[in-house]
Image 1 (cartoon, one colour):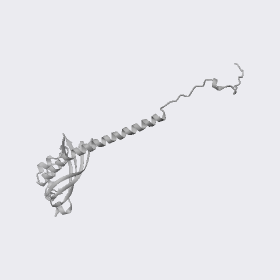
Image 2 (cartoon, one colour):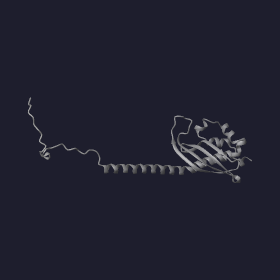
Image 3 (cartoon, helix red, strand yellow):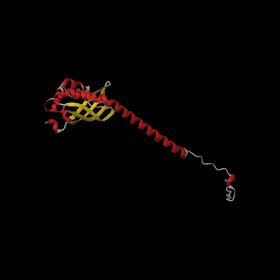
Image 4 (spheres, rainbow, N blue to C red):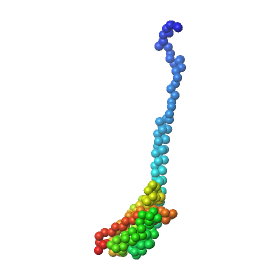
Length: 184
């Protein structure tokens, strides 16, 4: 063992000694900020693209959906149960019978369809739906609401859920309401 003491001279020039340099790691702050901004811009563009696609799809589907609802209202107004029932999707028909549709358009309910002139969709929401419950609409589904115009200037409301079956819109659910003066 060497018990010899070697003092450190603090007066020595330390610049002559080689000390390990700390290496810079990571991304420079400027590049990080630019990357974050580009990511935000990309997300905004994707959101705008999806919004545009959704609006374009919804707008394109209004006329075919109005046509189905118009056919339903005309069939109900002429009390053609078979024609009205045929406009419901196979999924909806598994849950209701032809007699259920007959009950909804005959008797006191006929006032909801008597004097029908036209339907206009005011609100539409189209989405792709997937569900483990086979009784709810699947695939491309439209939730719509709008106005019904009757003879005599009376206006009612309609709301419906339709599903696209093999490229054709079909009714899953429909609700028609009219003001009290329609029932006089």
